[in-house]
Length: 270
Length: 152
Image 1 (cartoon, rainbow over the protein chains, first blue to last red):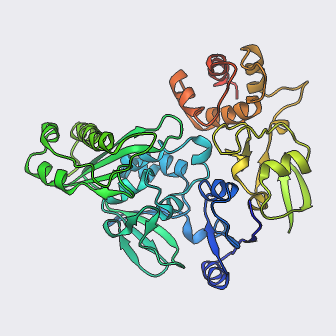
Image 2: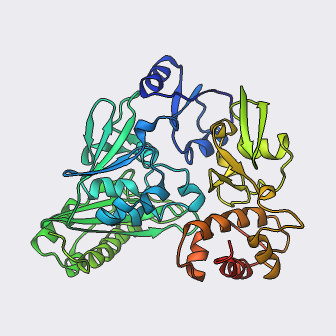
Image 3: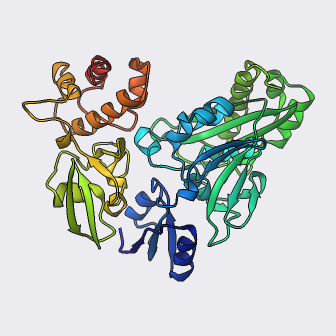
């Protein structure tokens, strides 16, 4: 790892000022991506700004609009928090599949979403559930958040403070998990909001996306058989040692089918 | 920079570079060599220690990040003449051969039985996803942890 200056601000404004005043700064949340990246010298910031002292980024709250989750909430906290298990169990189940236990004790939802790894799980939830990313200056709809490979709609000094999710009637997540890393080769989150179906896909392309074609078919006929006749083109899908683009297109269908099967077996909380 | 870190209930003051990993400070500054650097890429878990009561991979944490936290290593959970129940279980079930993965396995095992209910062999195996062993094939490790579920 190259050298850097380390800062641990105690209030949000201090964190933002430090960022603006530095040459090539980066925010540090759980560090489960940043530190390994810096160890491999793939990132060499001049200043590392540790967010872990900022209590305003922590905590989980329930309101009429849904659940609001602090950016620094760890994956294990999301997986086990009573409010999430009760009101948005699909998110708790999704978080429990991330990496491994030690990684889940440090990695955070804000860090994961800001990083936007093409194989990360939360992005499928943000899109599948129609959630929003709240920063210090605005709220960004999940649909508008993921732009390209590791590229999000965040401005350079913009910090995620909370992630907000509306509560669906039913939702399920199915993932083809890389055996070694736990990352999603492909992951599909299907949600039912009073008959409006949303499908969020991760792992297939450079960033998470919505499967609008599948959504439209499912809204005509909410049945697993629909997926046997749906075409998923593999243009733009990732091809690597784990799976070809063609196989990923196939997995999109298979996993959407599995998620939908799980969803249909749930009691409709309308 | 100067930091104070609490390791195994002892506070140590030291001057280190920010780019120093926690595992390096534990092994080289504090001579607590139970935590091992197996892969250095956050996969193998041989570096697992407890940070504020939760298992973490110390090769993926900067020492400066733990300044206000409590770190516990394998040296801090038991003594040769007063083993932690999990250490006893590993011994009784022959859950180690070369021993390289063992400190990390035990620290993760303690986290697992402390924080999860209804552990069966499958759930234990899932809980060990962050810890690799090249010697044992995991079977005896799982048996050791299964036997220690109510004793830890």
